[in-house]
Each structure stands twice: as structure tokens, then as C-alpha cells.
Amino acid sequence: MQAEMVFAGKCLTSVSFSLFKRRHHSVVRDTIFALSSGHGKCGVSVIRTSGPASGDALRLLTGWKQLPSPRRVTLTSLLCPATGELLDRGLVVWFAGPKSFTGEDCCEYHVHGGPAVVMGVLQALGSVQMLRPAEPGEFTKRAFQNGKLDLTEAEGLGDLIHAETEIQRRQALRQMSGDLGQLYQKWSRRLVTALAHIEAFIDFSEDDNVEENVLTTVDTEVRKLREELEEHLRDSRRGERLRDGLHLVLAGATNAGKSSLLNVTSQKPAAIVSPIPGTTRDVVETVLNIGGYPVIMSDTAGLRESEDPIEKEGVRRAKERLDNADIIITVVDASKVLLNRISILTHLKNLLSSPSSEGNHREVLLVLNKSDLLHPEGLDKVQELCEDPELPTTCFLSCQTSQGVGDFINILTQKLEKICGDPLHGAPSLTQTRHRLHLNKCLSALERYTTYREQDLVLAAEELRISHRELGAITGKVGVEEILDIIFRDFCIGK
Image (cartoon, rainbow, N blue to C red):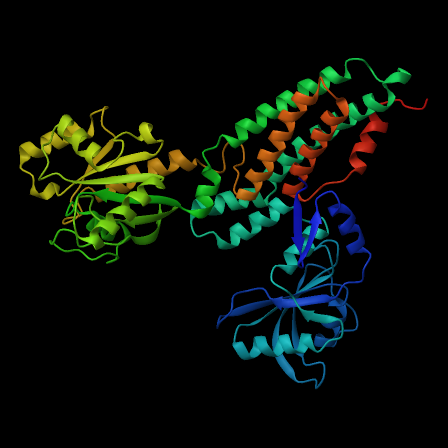
């Protein structure tokens, strides 16, 4: 049941992970280098080195006898170490370890972004002894191994680099700042204390050096931790949804205007629009940024009975998407449906398994399309339907004239915010399936502790050890020394 970490193709148990890091520190490392900015032509490219030979490489490329002051930008000529040829004039920044991103000696070369310049500087660095090209993610891995980042912060950095929307950026930045890791480390410290106390009771209670209420205190702490873990896990996967993108599915009868609504929302001809019913046979997806939230909007085949095998397959795929949707956007042709509550509910029931978001635990947005074809009295009825509390959230619009599309986007943004929330407020959100897996295992171990508590204290202590190991696997910080330190700090043993 031990969590596992994988680095450089090697599998390590989380318990032995701290030992791995100490062994790794004792080995003289290569110095790595790589292009840190994007590939392709640009104004400025940044090339980074990290490792003990970074200073030697900097002196060879600049001709300097001494290293510059740390964290100060210096304009200089960069020379080929073999020939002395001028490669470029650029800026260099020296970072003396451990005050650097990786915790090692580092240097950044800010050079002109032409491919020939970048290649020339990279080749020059490659010619320096003890330097080699970095592997993917190796700078961040070294930062983790040197204690500059924990695993959650490293994952947050990766999410920040890949963030495509404003809300994704906020969530990644909060995780990278350490909020999530600090929460797990706080729980981990409480678990270590509880484990140390129960271990002390097992080993030293007969010597009357341990207070009798120690086990009651441990039981209370375990119960509180279980409650906090359960609350943390009851988050409707909002952090993971925000990280990966929410799934919005356009559903409805044929020719209701689903494809038109997809095109209007994405502002491009993503789907074919035709007056012929059943034009859309397969699922058409497009990735959008709606109010800062990342969404994957899917246009699906019109839901109807058909003998056409291709259309039947399209309907099957549409229903499959509905089962996995975060928000179902039901599009209805308002010009062809009786505009009253009963007829709308009946129509929704025929289209979906449940017309209510509460019935299937998904949000439902009802869109009454083709408002441009309604008479004034029809518009009045539509307005009444939009305010009807017994219907799902309702809006009416015209894909033909774009009237009401702005209101549709605003309502959709509110639903997205309801699902994901604001990552800058409240407790930090789970963002990785890996976190959820370890937290569930941690919770299961705490539940088993309660079961074993009256039967066998040794087994109960083992469950606390397992739960601590699972928390440590999330941040990458696990060490048996912590338990011993607390035992001798909190108990006057041996006096």
C-alpha cells in the first residue's frame, strides 16, 4: 500500500524518498543547460544553466575572471570557448546557490531570439566540460530535490505554464505559492504528532512516563482530521474540472439551432449549419474561454428516433456525452414548441433523462432559440418562462440576429462560477487525480484506525503511519525522523 514516486525511470516508495534525496545530494551532479523560453523566432530567448559548473561556463563564454554579483543584470559579449568568435551581445544574470530556482548555482543568458544565435550559444555551452543538455522537467525536478518546491508546488508550476484562461492562472498560481502543500503539510504534522504519541504510549506507558489521556487526545485528533479530509474531498471535483476544462453539451431536437449556437458562441464556423434535419451526425467539439473558465463545448446530433444507422450512432454518442456533461445546454426551437411550463417540461423530459439539474446532479440551461420568429405575444410568454422558478435556468435568444447571446454568455459564466468557484477564495482546491487518490487512501487508513483502536494499538498505529505516508506522497515530504523527534520532544522519557 506504499505510495510510489518515479524519477529517471526508478520507482521509489515514499518512505525511502527522503533517503533518496540525501543520497542524491551527496553525488556531484552534472551541470545542465537548456532553452527556457519558447522555440521559434522571437526578440529575446532565455537559456539557463544549473549545476556546479555554471560559473565555469559563464567565465568561458564571457572571458571574465570573476563572477558578477548575484541577481544583477549585466550586458556582455558571449564568445565561443573554442574559437573566441563573437556569438552575440546579450544580458546575463548570475544566481549563486542556494538562492536560485533550483537551489544550485544557475545562470541565465538573455540573447537575441534568432535560431542561429540560440543554436550557437547552446553549442558553446555543450562544448564546456561537465555540461549536458537538460532532460524534460529537470530544472523543476532539481528544485524539488533541493527543497525549493514540494510536489504540489511543482505541479502548480506546470499548470501555470499550461494555463490558458484567467481562472486557470489564478488556481495554478495559488497552488504554486504553496497553499495546497501547506494544508497537506499541516495535516501531516498533526498526524505525526498523533503517531508519536501512540507509539510512545505503546513503548513507555508501563514506566508511567506517558499521561493516561494520551490515547483520548489521539482519538480526538484523528476524528477531527477525518472530518476535515471528508470536507476537502466533497468538492465536486471543482479544481480538477477547472484544470482540465468543463464539458458543456448542446442537446435538443433536430433543427433547434444547436450548431448555430456553437458557431455564435465560438465566433467561428465550427459546425455545419443546414435547414435539413439531422445534419449533425457526429460530436463537434470546440475549446472556449468563457468568462475566464476553460470549457469544451460539444454540438451533438439531434435527439430523435431514426432508422438511419449513421444517425442512430450519432444519437447514441449524443446521449453518451450527456451522461458526462458538467452543464447540459438544452436548445429548443421556441417557434415550434407551445410556450407554457407544462409543454416545455414535457419536451425536456422527452429529450433528457431528467429535466432538472437536481435530478441528475448536473446543471441544465434551457435556451429558447429563434426569438426573431416570435410575435410580440410570444415574446411575453417567453419572458414569463425565463422567470418561472419551476423550470431550469432559462434564457431566450436568436442565433440569427445574435440578440440575447450576451445574456446567454453571462448566465453560462454564472453557472461555471457556481461549479468551480473563485480559486483565490476559500480553502485551496484539489487539482490532481493523484491527490484525490492519496487522500482517499489516507482517509481509509484513518477509518481503519478507529476499527483497530479497541483491538490492537500496534495495528492502529500502523494505520496512522499509512495515512501519514499517503499525505507525504502528495507533497513528496516523508521522513521517519519526524516521529522520533516528537517522541523525545513531547515526552520526558529516560529521566
